[in-house]
Length: 451
Image (cartoon, rainbow, N blue to C red; front, side, top):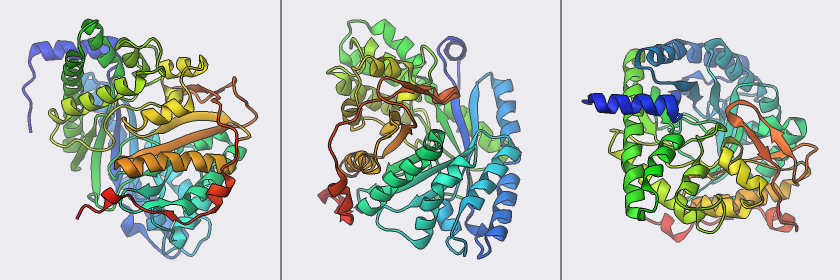
């Protein structure tokens, strides 16, 4: 598919890039590792390293070439792989940390930013390989730099695997005790998708091609700028303005995706049109909501404003790309959004409000710092709540919590770079230990019976 772009659109895009933080957040190459399986973990590691380096050899240089030629910033070049619990299922080793280190070594050889797929799909139950991978997560994430991990514990069709929820609470707790930064690379999903280009939750699904290019675009600053011309206008005008802006943002992502696909001779997968904020001023989803008329993100009305934003972004984006996928909508990671950070520090934006907001937007409770002494059962209970929202609403939700070692409410933890910094948020008192200890599976909701 080709696009006719006139001079006015080119000038608008240049302004968006120069002044409104427009960028392609990531070009992510998905690579199948199913043919790398072997009983000997050393052989499996060698095969994984060789295949990743061979398939993604030109990923970074091609991305940089596109940046120079088109003048479009591509912030990250990444790789996602088949969930390692599937690849390593025939391995005789109990500890999968060597596999994570192999992914890390390949990522550093390639010069990419992150590699995702140290993952397991356990929404209906565990295989032995799932258990081994999950138990390897604390060591794997704290002994590597670029590896990201995810575990799917629930789905609309299967219900919630509460044994997996309980285990992930303990795993996050163990990881935080070693290094809280490891938790920033770990996501617990409900209804995980196979073509997500964003970290830390990216993995290459089994229904995907041998190799594929997925692109994630961004642009909260562009949407915020556009809405400043709508002061006092009804919501119909607001929605239409967001749709038109999302269309322009996604067209740029489609252009980059197709160009990368052609130059790398790899099929184009999807454009994920999620609004992904950064800590930079003027690149905030919270600011968009405040421009709509909210004094501060988190007050009453925030969920409605976010619902409008998320829907309008999707409606505008699907008209601009032949294939839209991934998560697509609006992200609300607390540490990565300057407006969210400010609202949380003021005490206006709390965990309960964030949970309500996740009912209407992409993903879930993302990059939230909690007190360092938060217990495993409380973490599991938060995961269970968010998984229930995803399960019942047939949408992807996720939890990325960081118990900040040695810190309490009112303090802050700094992650650096795109991960930003986060205030330590308060949690409810009271124990959910007896609830989590029940185990078993919360049954799938009635809407799972769609046949």
